[in-house]
Length: 125
Image (cartoon, rainbow, N blue to C red; front, top):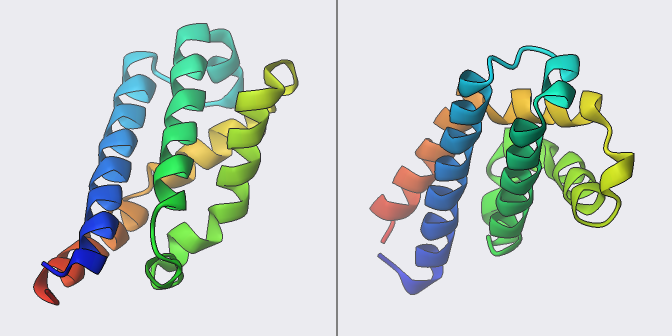
């Protein structure tokens, strides 16, 4: 694998791991709405941390890879906003936005998209 692709593959692997952790948190607490997310304090703490981790991993990826990942690219602004609010203004957390972003991150299409990009990077080495 090319050195230039290695970091992108590592970041995608981490993001997929964090998405899996997000799924586990949602399943453990049976979260299906922003109200349930707000009530489940441990879950929303986990979700905010996982979104922060996803954002930080995304920051290390090349712009070309992000641009080649349409769903992930579309979520960039929401990831940044959620990460900033979670990190700096926790009392102002918008559970509707947080739940909507988590739901989009858990979408099968995004996971498949990230897996496809990762496979392409591995094969282009």
